[in-house]
Amino acid sequence: MRCLLALVILLALAAPAHAAAPAAPTFDRTPRQGALLVGTTTPGSRVLLGRDNLRTDDAGRFLLALDRDAPAHVALRIVGPDGTEGTFDLAVAPRAWKVERVNGLQPKKVTPDPEHLKRIRAEGALIAQARRRDSAAARVPAAFAWPVTGRISGVFGSQRVLNGQPRSPHRGLDIAAPPGTPVRPMAPGVVSLVHPDMFYTGRTVMVDHGFGLASVYVHMRDIAVTEGQKVDADTVIGTVGQSGRATGPHLHWGVSLFGTLVDPAGLVGPMPQEGQ
Image: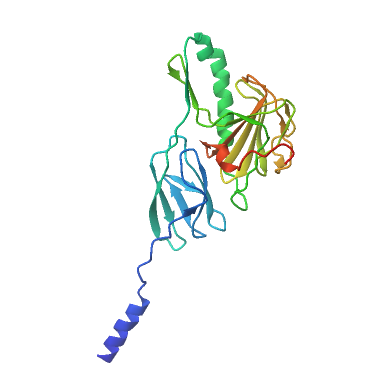
């Protein structure tokens, strides 16, 4: 009997206790449509959004992009280092987007001709390819800076309806500044695309920041970098211009995570004053 009791106690001690689910992730800001979030989970965990495996750094930080039209709830699955899993519901706050309706335009001003459409699609494929890069980096980029200072002339998420046809929403931030004003990247990275003359965006530069995060700078007058070049926050990558389809000198600044475009204004503080 004593031997049997000892065996029962030994088996009870050896049996693994029921593992608890991973702790809920925390985020650096309120989740809302168009936001890029820096999340933190237990180091060594896997973070999944649908079928996408979000890269994490050694500190357990990861990036999460919420589309302009993200639903009210997003499910995030986390697999802990010990294999335990948990699914967490992320409530996404809605935003009201500006819509402008313009009627009476000539058809050619609304829809490009077939020749231009072919060029637009080819150039769009180059940008999409650069946005899909998933390069490694030591840590999640979490500090960002304005690429140029000036007047905000176009906001993220706004949309125009031309002759009753909804156009694609504006997926970046427009900053009006004098021609020739230096443009710098929002964070360190590697130049992933340089194009001297795209149909819509003119002189275009893209920077890969690692973890699937990319930024784009368009309508520039001059380009000062080459593909594959490493840049930091002080590197001048070009100057403000109005190349491509632009009505005045300004920088269009776009940010994406694995192709999901987010609001650049949410990454930085108030626009610095001149001389700061």
